[in-house]
Length: 138
Ligand SMILES: CC(C)(COP(=O)(O)OP(=O)(O)OC[C@H]1O[C@@H](n2cnc3c(N)ncnc32)[C@H](O)[C@@H]1OP(=O)(O)O)[C@@H](O)C(=O)NCCC(=O)NCCS
Image 1 (cartoon, rainbow, N blue to C red):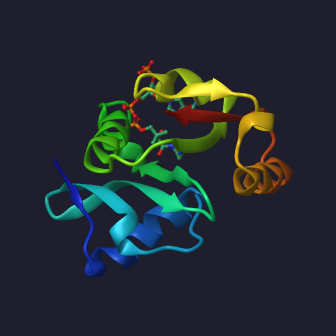
Image 2 (image 1 turned 45 degrees about the horizontal axis):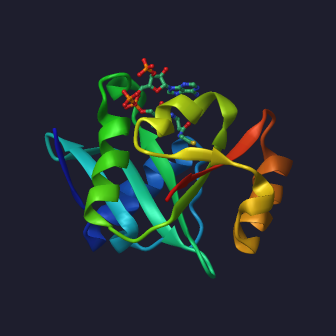
């Protein structure tokens, strides 16, 4: 398994992976992504997306048969090593807090998030059942 920056021709496979989990597929550009590959097949992805005035980590997906092997955690840690810009925000289910805290994210109150992220929060909250939280890697 290798982790590398995506290139343009990876985009169709990334889209398939993202759609398989109904993850965020809006405003996609290949250069936002880090991917995990096994035998030339894309088995995981994550991206940092620029919103109006903030950065959001998201579109994190690992193919089901490759889960619980540390690949998701590695993708998150590596994209933060490659991209030094901070702060980076994310929205996730509350049950994912401990997963992201291992990569240096802390939960914050939605009131402290930038306005664009507040809009995302409302949108995600209306689509997903379960408690959504905001986390920041400062
Ligand atoms: C989340 C995801 C990317 C993790 O990938 P992975 O390669 O299995 O991640 P890792 O092996 O590094 O870590 C697995 C850990 O995440 C936890 N985890 C994964 N999904 C979880 C969930 N929905 N709720 C709570 N914990 C979860 C596992 O329990 C495991 O915890 P442990 O380390 O304490 O045993 C993968 O499960 C996935 O693609 N899920 C569907 C899409 C998704 O939910 N994306 C995240 C949106 S915020």
